[in-house]
Image (cartoon, rainbow, N blue to C red; front, side, top):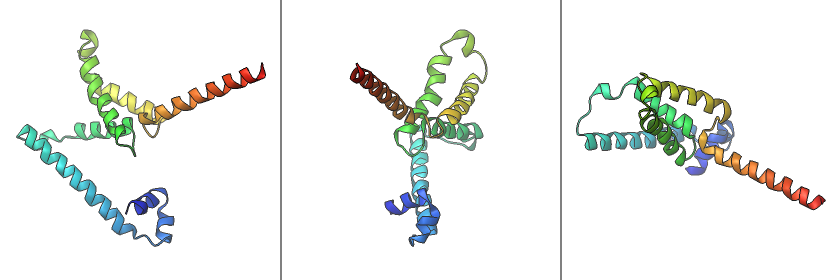
Length: 151
């Protein structure tokens, strides 16, 4: 199942050519995602003890989408980093500043600007910044080694 899903992620046409039943695996992936989402909802209601439709508004859906876009997809740690950024930074930093924290909707403006910046510079999310930093450090090491070898 895992290999079939990975093949479908890379190329659906290639997966179908190899005989993978696309509908079966798409429905299976959807069912698994639904189970996890419903488990999260059950745990949320158990923790809070009460839920009503206004709790799950468009703003919360957009914040969850922002968590995924900012943090990164295809990793487990990406949404964790995204949730710290989307929910943590406005609570910790913006609320502590008296002048800036009093502006209504500043957290949403911050999140919107951050989404635009992340999509422009890191389309896969901020989780991949580490790889770019490693590449940059390795390039610097190679240049230093080349300079040392030339002298």
